Length: 475
Image (tube, rainbow, N blue to C red; front, top):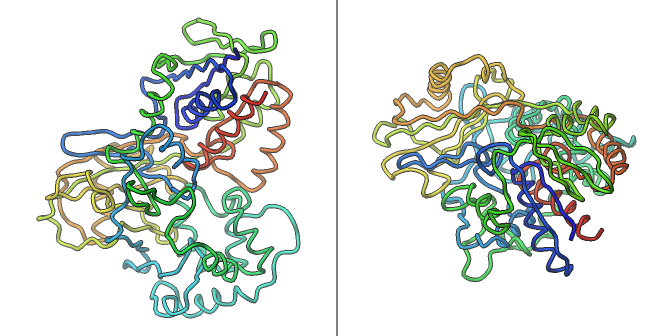
């Protein structure tokens, strides 16, 4: 019976454990799985807290069901009845530009406009900017192969104004990176494919939309009879941590160890010895490293120095999010949509805000509004480190006053700081990961999973973990 030790109890590690347990039955195998988590809880950056009457998300508040691996995982661990759609009757995204909030024009898919009149009518983009975006259909496709920065790609195809007012703020919240060095091949490969196949992002996106089924989500991502409806973003009634906890139940609590930090991994026979920080040594045929790359590198540096050096070179960003709740009666403004985003060129101290209790049900009492505000993540990261809690809340309130006109005092606050929590996929990332894969392959039984390498977002992490787990099951 092969033994697999998974280091790291984030969503990547837990998804791998679930796939190994479920896949063992499919492959008619017996697999011994043990998850080691150095902290006192499972979930990694997924953390939901129930504080009084509030349900607060410290990390991601949702997943994308179009990334079907995440939806399949939720169904597999029995969470389909707990799926929670967003309150789409209130949906809408606003962008702060030139001192006021503008609606993101209808039909803009990420940064690509697909409808004529909404772009004509919007006050967000100047007329020269609109004309430049429309000229995208006549821009020849790039002849040279290889990666380029997102800033270069968007500016080349849609113009500088589109980059600064739409693309940068929209992607900053997902990737917490700087478009000037963000790899478009690693983060938006679909756009590169559209350019090469259709010669135009606008033509490619319109064609993709025409050819998709009429339902909002289709195939495996479509809601099944009797299940909650599917929206673009999905969560769970009791928060995202339900997913982590359901994975533990599926795998078995006896197969998950908390407060089990790993000091080093050493080759032993055809497998590995995993040395814990308390001096205990465990043996395994396969080891899956689901921690941040800089931590995983320290574990393997003695016997695999070359891949460890490559892993340590991956850059990271830090961010903070602040949850505040206000009495509805105290709000002096009407909050529109799900929230707003702030372009870097506006020189504000926050990046975005989500109206949590408007976007989701079961997050706060009806007479209160709870929101999450984001700072750092590639833009003014110094604030995450330099401000104490009181200063951070005061900064957020000052920014909400300027951006939304909100002047109320919060009834509740909660601050989360995430140090070196999101990897930056900079230009050339895919080539570097291909080299890292080859270096790791020299050590059979050693597997890298998690957001450090190829899996940005919950869906990406789950997908890469399942690929690695399937490789073990077929070995």
